[in-house]
Image 1 (cartoon, rainbow, N blue to C red):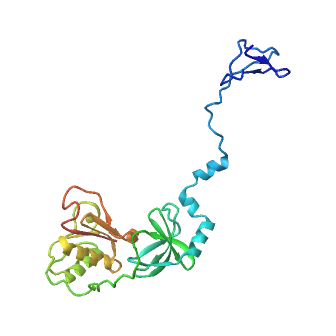
Image 2: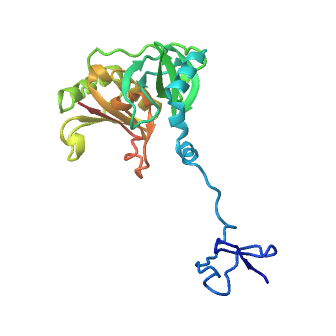
Image 3: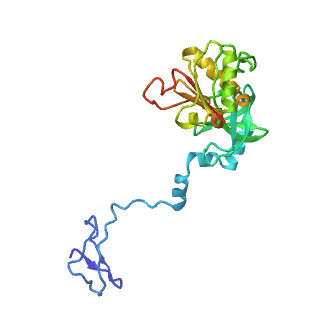
Length: 264
């Protein structure tokens, strides 16, 4: 016979030559038990819950453990120099990170060599902190040329209307760049309608000179953000430098023919 009853168990056992368990011809075995067919050939291997949990942990999560961070800080032996002012963050993750300070331009700082989510880990007073990647140099940067200072009078006869900070931006730019004689302030949209924005009509390399001049003196002038040549610099994200903007479809809309300044 192809199958035999297992004494005392009530389970039918397949013949050795059968690769899988076969159903008995009768649904009930000799002992009266129900016989079932189970094919386990395609079952996936059992994986432990702890293995699944480890696999789900992200690389950043593992990087930020106390043990890994302590090891990175302890092993840091390389210095870099900040090429611009950089915000210091508690973690590389934007959603969970907290701003805790500022790394000055030209400052030497110890780095661990670890990077994550477009940020670089640095060591400040023995603590692990993070800064935006791309602004740390291997060598001390050369001092920047001395900025054109504020002061002097507007001598080209131009004037603008607007809130006090807008008038201050005009006076400063006019004094430093008297060759620029065209400005725009009030119009019917956005910050211009509130008297908080000014357009300085200039292009090319001189436009960048003006944009950098305003950026360098943003505190004295009460500047919120500057746009030029399809790039934006803002106070709240100053550590990221000039950021690209989306294409708005024209030379003027993309700010290639004027520097836009919004003030507080």
